[in-house]
Length: 417
Image (cartoon, rainbow, N blue to C red; front, side, top):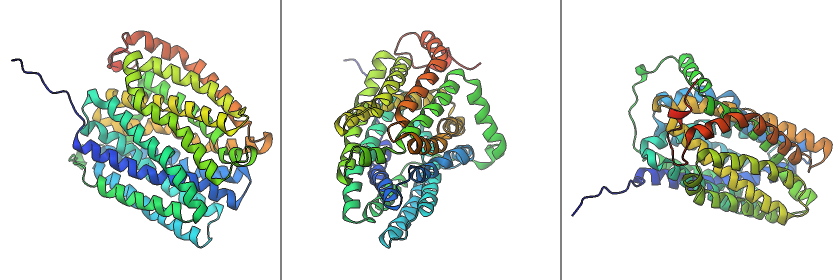
């Protein structure tokens, strides 16, 4: 008889993280559906609606770099569960204020900023802890699973619950989100801890500079970060007034809007289930190029959607290719970046990639107010197309250098400058 090694399997710690992610994102999905509905009850001005969205993402611009340095020198588990606990308190306050009719646009924007600040720390720590509890060959699978459960909660299960709960009582979806944060924090607190020695880390300013220097020297990841920045700017420019396009132009009611978001999530869910296998078959960079090119066409089409069915189908396609982009780029960073720099490099990457989202939200509100609710999507599609053309030489050069689609050591081939 010959002895064969068992195939690597995802650990029990990973599955606790997976369950915490799912529970958290069901509440977040309910919150995401309820916030624009609540904002629309306060104001119909697209510019004011966009302010709330901008406040949610502003922390990625202001806090991403120090958060990355914090993640590299702190216990990931503590950061994860404590950020969730603070978010539970913030959303609980929103629920109480909404129940008594004390919510205004400034109050909603302040709460959104606080939640976004916690999300900066949580998102960075969640990606940094994954290589600690998942073997490297399983990172694509683990990230695919994370994307799937995030999609199920954030886009598939949460929004219908949020819109239904909002129709019953304004405070209910926010109470649901607060409860999900509490349950998630309890699960995250049980994850294994990796000891970190504070004096082994450089001063904060030096630590931030190290992460910035590493990313700027890596041609492929640097290009992907800038391309992500343009894409997220365009994505927020387009989607910030989606609630107005759906409820005013296409005349959907509160429940139908929730179903539209859930229908759109089907594409993201399917992507989370199959995209890891797709990447393994055709390669990471071909998958990226496919996702980017498809998104350009989809965004133009969304702006021309004649009804909710076409809109939902195009949003589903957008969800599928966005998931493909996420799985590939997150796994690349986890494979390429040294473990001791992962938090800082992630923070710089997300600063470049997400820092323009608030500006995109404000721009989208102005475009919708000036040119109509359909205008942001074709404009965003055109800008994404131009960015892809500019980045294409670097991506094609990397594609040719990597060779076979199963090559998972891009950093050895494309490397740093």
